[in-house]
Structures are given as structure tokens and as C-alpha cells.
Length: 313
Image (cartoon, rainbow, N blue to C red; front, side, top):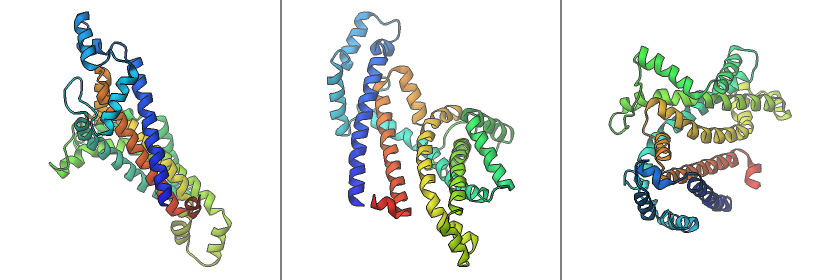
């Protein structure tokens, strides 16, 4: 198991390196005149050339990337070209907001998906119809429309939650819950659509296996068979879908943060991309890639704990 973790960490490091190379190249080659974008259309050619030299944009692309990489390996992601703030500080302060809604959504989705997926596996009941309805709604309706509906209904009309803004949990627990409940709900609906359907299908498949009939013949109750044995075998595919859903939620958080005016990395990425602030965009790319790799590693370890065959492989 230790060697498995070491191999995954090493492969993850190479993956982050490859992602930064691709992102850096695309940002610099596809960004046009970055110095002009930062200074505005009224800047003189001399001022633009001076700004490009100041930022090192007149050097070869490989040299620029190497300087950025050596700094990143030492923990220095540079400074924002628009605000002058350290990129590491800017990204870490926004990351807490995004992770609070993404992790909240994935936890809610995981719990509800297990409950709904197992209940829907009996097929034909109202729970099965509800799960299929949620699946259709989650896949067919864009997340921002669900978010707008939640804002209008529960924030503007009923005044149960905050419509926009974010309150840190260190400031007020109730204020934090009020500010993240609707964003978490908007993200969780789409996640439940994916995970609950997967669990439903995996449980239905597992229930038809010979070992289930053997366990029932031995007198074990249906609930014990399902929750102790069937879920253990059906959990592997569901965990894989959960990992993919987590990655999708990070991307979906960009839109949700705009709807609810949350100061997360999604909002930061939009602002940095619009202004041509490449150091900030690269900081977000690195942070996101590391988070995704860590999540995939945790999912692999969870699958290994559920299935001995995974540990052997």
C-alpha cells in the first residue's frame, strides 16, 4: 500500500508539471499583447514595451516558464500583476470559500445519493421516480438556472437565506451557514443526479449476484445484506463517479460564485483572466490540479479499503 501511495504521488507530481506547461503555453501564446491588455488601449507603444520588459515578457517563453517553475517549487508563485498581492496569499484566501461550498456539496450529495440510490434500487416506488426525476433535472437544467431559482425563491421571496455575499465561519457560524446553504444546494443537485443514479444501478446489479442469494438463504435480513455487503461491492463505481463529480463541481463553482457573489477562486479566475493577470491564473491552476490529484488519491485508497482486489493490483 505504501508503494502504491508513493507511485501515485510521483505520477501526480508529473501530472501537475505537465498541466503547468500546457497552461503556461496556452496563456502566453493565446493571450495576445499581455502588456497592452494590462495597461489599456490608451497606453503608448513605448509604455507597452517598457511594461513588457518589466514583466519579462520580452524573454523566450521557455526562460519565462523556467523562472516561474523555480519560484513555484520554492513556494513563490509570484505577485499579481494588477494588485501586487502575493499570488499564494490571494489564492489561499479565496480557496477556503470555494472548498467550503464544493466539499459541502459533495458531502450532501454522497449522503443523499446513498440513501436515495439504495431506496430507488427496489424499483417502481416513488423514491425511484424521484431519483430519476432529479437525474433528469440535474442533467438537463444548467446550474446557474437552479441557482437563480433558489435565490429568487428562498432568499428574495422567503428571506430564509442570504442572496449574495459570504460570511467566514470564524466570524459567525449562522452567517456562514446562511451564505453557503443555497450555493451548496445548487451544486449538490447536479452531483446527486450523477451519483444516485450510479449507486442505484450498481445496487441493482449487485442484488442479482449469487452471493446475495446465498446470504439471504442463510437468513440475513435485506437491510443487513444491502448495507453490509451489497454497498461494499457497489461502492467502487460510485466512488469513481464521485471523484469525477468533485472535479466537475470545482468547474461549476465558477458560475455559482458569480451568481451568489462569493469571493472564491472561480470569481478570482474570471477577474484574472479578464485582466490578463497570468501569475494569478497559474496559481489557481496549480492549486486546482493539486486538489484534484489529492481527491483522486483519497478515492483510490477508499476503493482499496472496500475491495481487496484493488489492493492486490
